[in-house]
Image (cartoon, rainbow, N blue to C red; front, side, top):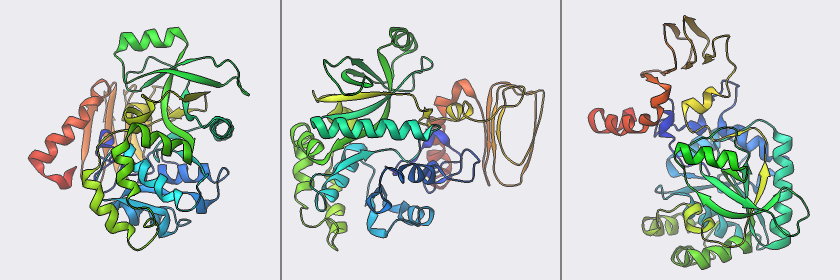
Length: 353
C-alpha cells in the first residue's frame, strides 16, 4: 500500500512526492525500496503488487524497476485501506483463487528482517490452516498514544506459541490508558500488516462490507485488461472511505495475532524517526552532510543536499530543511504539523503542501 501522503512528515513529504519515495533514513534507499527488498525472499517479484494513487505510478516504476506497469494498481482517489485491499484482492482473484496474501504499508521501518520473515511464515501457515485473518502485533516498548493496540488471549491449541486470538482492538488511547496497556502485558501494537488467504478476505468483505464487495465484483473479468482503468475510475468515487481495521478487522470473529518483535516502527512522525537514527553524545539524530550543532540536545535534524546548517542552543526540536522550505518545531508539538499543513494549503496554496 503506497498511496498515502504522510503529511506528518512535512515538509519532506509532500502531496506530489510523499515520504515512501524518500530516503528518510539517509541509507541510500527509499522506504518503498526497502519494503520491496524485504519481501523478495518471501515472494517472487512478479507476485508483488503496489497499490498507489495514479499520480504516483511513474514514481513507483522509477524506484522499483523490477515491477511491470501491470503490477502497479492505481487509485483515482484516496479512499483509505479497505477499498485499496478490495481492489488488489479482486485483481489477484483473476489469477489465483487460492492465493496467500500479505498486505503491508510501503513506509514502515523493520530492523530485523529475518525475524520478520519468520513471523510472516508463521502467519501464512495459520491463515492457510484455519482460514482466519491474521495480523502482526508488535511488543510495545513505551506507552505510545500514536498507535492502535491489540489485546490478545491464548488459543486452546496452536502449532506456535506466538499465535494468539485477538480479543479487542483499541485505537490510539490516551496516555493513562496506554500505560495500563503496557503494564498488563496482553496488549501489543497494531502493525497494520495483515496476512490471509484470498477466500478468507473475500468472505470477510462479502460479510462485513457487502456493498463494497458487490461494487468490485462487478468488474470480474476486467481486472488486468484494457477495461480495468475505466472501471476503477467509474466505481471509486462511490467507495466508502473506510479502513480495513474499522471495516473488517474490528468486527470479524476469526482474527489471530502473531506476537512479534522485529524492530518495527511505522515512521509516522519526525519523533519516531528520531528513535531510529544514530545519536551523537547529546542525543541529536541528524541526517545531512553539513550539519553543525553547538550546545544542542535531543533534536532531530534533516537537511537535504549539501546545505550547511548551523544550530545553536536548541533542545528537543525538529529541524527540517528541504529545497525551498524550513520547519522548526518542538518535538512535543509534532502532532500539530498536520494542522500546519492544512493551514499552509489555505493560506499559501496547494503546491507548498
